[in-house]
Length: 305
Length: 291
Image (cartoon, rainbow over all chains, first blue to last red):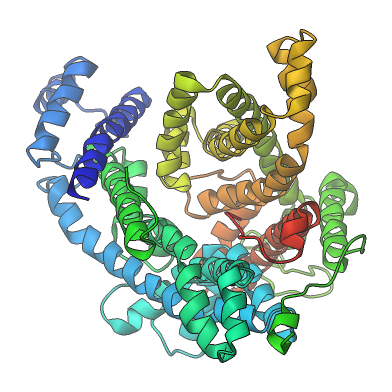
């Protein structure tokens, strides 16, 4: 197990390196630098600033400096928010995105899975059809449509929840629902399909033959075996929720990493863009490793190699 | 046989016209038709300003109301569908061409080449789509072409993966072997023998990719990193409406409904096609992998 973990972590380092390299080259080739303002700076001052941020050096040197600092835990200064380092910004914004992602993750876990079970148990009935149709709706509704709708109904009309910002629990409900509804629908569908597949296995037939009660068969025999494909998507879903909240953070004015990523793009704040990209990449790599290990825990037949 | 076991038997649903599939085809056809004939059926031009009727809620002249410059929302949505639909369709076609070729080569060659080619795919696949699209549009610009290209660059990897898997399955089959035996070249085998056999899954993926591409464009435009005026894609309209959500919700609601209906119809069609083409899934016993 530990050997496997080490191997996976060792393998992910070149992957992350390549992602860093690609995004660095992408940033470098972008026309227009961070200090190209509407008001032209005097050439001496501009040269000074560029020297300070190593922008005057050749690209491979810039990249080497960046990687060296990154390994030491220094992600560079922000070009836009003067006096603040990228690390400070991430320290403030990442927990917000993480909190939002985790909160949104609760919904598929506690609504998606039960919904899928119910649909599978009552398959081909009205209940099944309704829940599967709402799952299709949930998967397809765009974040900004749902978010705007929720704000209109619950914030502007009913005034139950605030429409924006990130100050307390009441601020978190609408964004979490907006973010979580897609995965919830997806998980519900997956759970249903997975359960139906297991229901056809021989050991389930045996359980029926033994005369065990239906609920017990579903909960003890079927669910346990149906969980594997669900767990395999849970990791990427969580990573996706934490990393994929750009639009939701934009809609609800949440000071998270996604919102900063969007503004960093418009501001050409290279270090901040790079850092957010790397944080996302690391998150996804970790999520995938965790999933593979969880596989082993859930299903002892799986061999890690 | 117990009652429970009987529940496991599924109806044979062969050769049945699926009402949902039919409905979604009709909706999609209507959308495409109205996009093509927008200049004919739109009551106003997309930039005609009715200064006497600014920010009007829907009435008989302006059935979806007007925006802050007095432009007719319904007409703008009609013209916008030209942009939104063509972004979706062109981006998907480009992604299909790249993905199919890449996946076919990777799966057909196998070995180390396959391994390297798939690692590249894994890396692009790992990052959130919308983020990669944003990063690419920074470089190639946010024009129509830039957006289309960026969406294609993100979307081809999923298609390449699917294609590779299909090729791996098919290339071991006897008819490929016999084609090799009679001396068919690699390209002939790929194009004439393997490709036609992958059409089913490819068409299904395409029906899912088109709405995804439409959604990517409208999301980008909505957060202000996509197309910008004078383009009036649905996303741009939604972005316009977002600013005035509180007092003039109709500005956002109508574009939002159209985007939702479009994406929904394509997705339902995709689901129905997937079911129709896969006898196992038709029985409802196959795991849905990746919508």
